[in-house]
Amino acid sequence: MKRILIIEDDEPLCWLLEKILKGKYEPIIMKNGLEALSWLSDGNLPNLIISDINMPTLDGIELLENVRSSGILRDIPVIMLSASDDSEKRKKCLALGASNYLIKPFEPQLLIEEIENTFKRLENPLSIDR
Image (cartoon, rainbow, N blue to C red; front, side, top):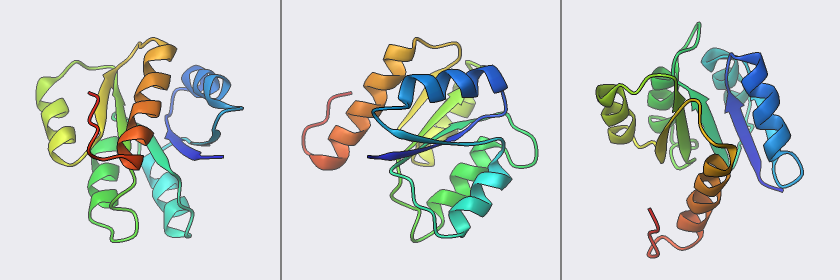
């Protein structure tokens, strides 16, 4: 079962994400970027990371920068979540290598489709379905 690291400080959203992903994936919930980075540094490797942007301690953009600059973590796909439709933040995340940038609130089915498409792109990089 594929492991998805979810980094989100909003409790109700954590509950929802765990509920919609559990069964098909193994969701691992972390409350902030620092906690997630520590978990990743301990050698834990998820198949995908879903991260909020605005979080205490270490925000999603800083986390993404850390993941992309790490040799072992560099290729893990990251989907960013944000309550802000800030085009500059979106551009920055995509330039740093995020797979996608979704605006909250989002339809759960949209997130599932994005996760599935991300895994399909990893398995067959030539078939780009964006």
